[in-house]
Image 1 (cartoon, rainbow, N blue to C red):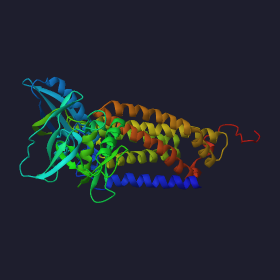
Image 2: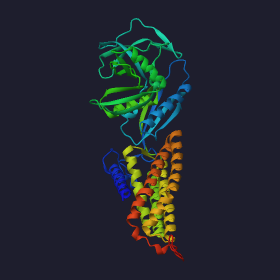
Image 3: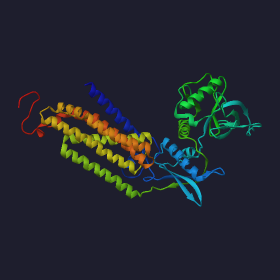
Image 4: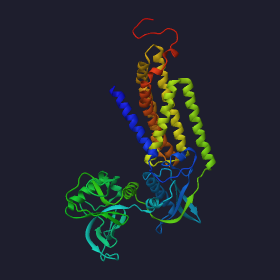
Length: 472
């Protein structure tokens, strides 16, 4: 009885979660293609809905070969867009008139401001010792400076950096820490993770930084020598925050606070995690794109998937009767769950993603067929319907679990080792298979145990019935 209550609870909670994702106004999208018009919260890809194109020239210093820089720029931008949720964006090199440019195509958006902030920002993060704070309407100048070489790079020891919130406030900072055996810098390369969150200690939002082992040692050494002094956290030549060091920090963590919105905090976290751009980008053009496939083609593909789903549902009812109806309910449940998660997460749905959804239809039905055949075997040896259902689910649990886990592992490989549309396929596949496993083992079981009296054992018993522990 306790297990049944748990199944009821999770079945209802998950359904409500998915349903709210579909009906709440989570976005301003207007989907007008086939059945997708009923799910405006789902973001559609370039191939279905179109999007925007941004093209950038590279501000490459003299003496540097552009071809050597373009690959690194594309890698960093791809990582930034993936971390920001634009997994279906396309980043490519375009050569025109002998000039190499970077083209970014982002599906399903009309307001490009956030995307431009992510793409156009260099993303250079570093920590520096604050020596002085001055107010000036013009940039102050360093009168006496020197350079120091670190890891083969010449770095100016001192500089003035503007405050990100007050354009007239300038910090004179020392860019290199001279503690320990050798001078060093603390940069974004020393950060292993950056996570945006609500500020639990006050108003606004924060970005929590976690250092790698080398970064943790550097940060501990710097804070140990700068107690009661200020360390500035600088991103793209602007001071985000300059807190006073109260004590040595050895846990390998830091916090960027004073951020006004979650979106800004998420942008900062994405920029830090994705790494620095090796050069500055200059916007060359921006334009709106139409869908890469015609509306009629997309509608035909979606409708074909719906027709296939209906055929499968009818087949299940014909072959398995009442159990087939339960399988169809589970299939609809899993589909709503998948669409609800896509709505909540803001993931972008493309045609490969739709293919992943259709594939999960088969996964859900396959799981139920395995379970039903086991239940039929239990009915054939004379078990009562409710007992047959319980025995059937118990005996196929490991089979269902192992089969789905292998598919999920394959999806994870695709997700982490690919990008673009293939990654979108992996997302829908993983979510769909997890949903199929939940509906097969929890939802279907709950429904079948509750309606086991509708099962007709005599349809499956052939010849002699053998009772457990009894006679023939």
